[in-house]
Image (cartoon, rainbow, N blue to C red):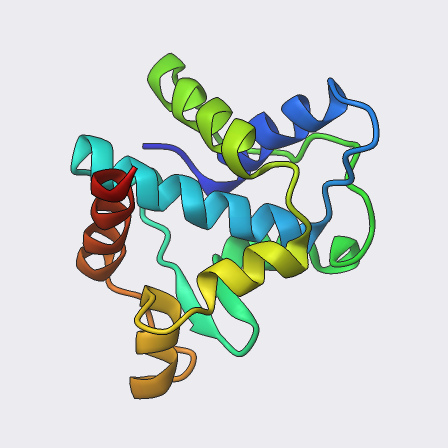
Length: 149
């Protein structure tokens, strides 16, 4: 398990390698959430170490990451974040797979994907606005995505 900041750094490194890809704070939040979901589905354990994901008004949010990226919501992130740890090789492979599948989508498209009916964010937002999105709910959703693929 890694911190959301370590996971974010892997996405920042991947974005730096490509032309015409803007990585904003909003987009990074979505990619970290998606990575966490696929890690739960594939490996049966959280990607994020002791960090909950909350159902905020505009989508899933990791508070530590949100606080660190406040000034980057709509701005391109170029610099690595100061993180207490690093992702391991298995996590980096998963992050790369998420980048390949979702990294070229805009933050708006990623939000639309997360906000569809019966998705973990919307189910939590309806019942408990600003509450924690259950890992069990996230895991079931991403397992369904893998089954459909």
